[in-house]
Length: 134
Image 1 (cartoon, one colour):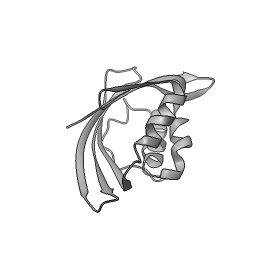
Image 2 (cartoon, helix red, strand yellow):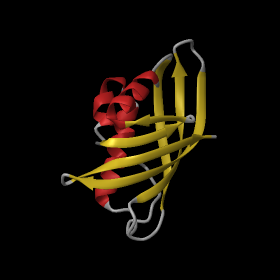
Image 3 (cartoon, one colour):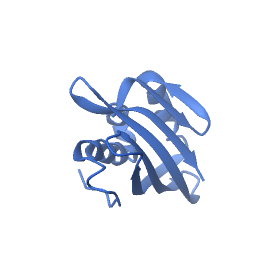
């Protein structure tokens, strides 16, 4: 897995959380990797995206599959991680995404996400994910 070009405080954003975020971003741009993307989340995770809520892995799987409708390719570019307090497992991520649509249109949009990580069965997963598109 390629290491993302992120700005972050190494003391506040530990390696085990960076690895989950890197895997999430790496798989988010590969249509064939939707199941691996979903596995970054707990079974009871909640996503708020575009004002729509997805609860649990089944709904999250449906949401990520629909996100590929009319999209030829996309490229997420997270840029900066803000840790929401020393010793917490909550972060804000700022970035952008490039989209090439099947009709030939191209779009780049900026976004911000709040992500809460939890340890479950010895693995770090995402419990809550809220993303806002600017």
